[in-house]
Image (cartoon, rainbow, N blue to C red):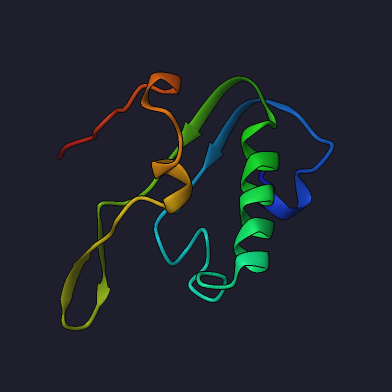
Length: 95
């Protein structure tokens, strides 16, 4: 089943993939700098990561190739950077 993080409250799945976890996307660029908005997005992130019963995959692209003037290097979400490294296993996929 496909869901948005905003509609996931109260639901659970065996495996959850949260994609697009880059700065400016999640949390959104609009919420950065506004404490209340950023905290609301942090709460939504928490709800999303707690929907997984067995496996949780937190995904972000390293490069964004959608720009007419070339690729842009993306940084992981602020929320990912706040997680203790002992709580996850990092995978890097190469071509």
